[in-house]
Image (cartoon, rainbow, N blue to C red; front, side, top):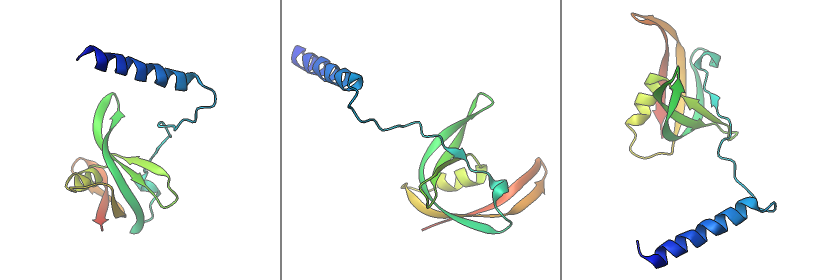
Length: 122
């Protein structure tokens, strides 16, 4: 990197720090607490509309698991690590996308119980 670009970068950093220290600067919070989407709060066969915003990860028991970020009509954001839901959205080529999530109920499987979920997109 040439000296001119380094000087410009340092100047930009100085301006950023000046803004960070200025009490009049308006900030956008990035750490808005997302709720975990609780499938057990759905009634049997209930369908709810969301916008799937992005794929992400969710840390559980010290291990990163794939997850999705969903937004409901009131603009509240949720994180969901349901395998069925994450796998469905991993096949979508472009996010965000409108969707409906339907929980058919809880079922017993060979590895324990799970939620029978259907995912629909626009």
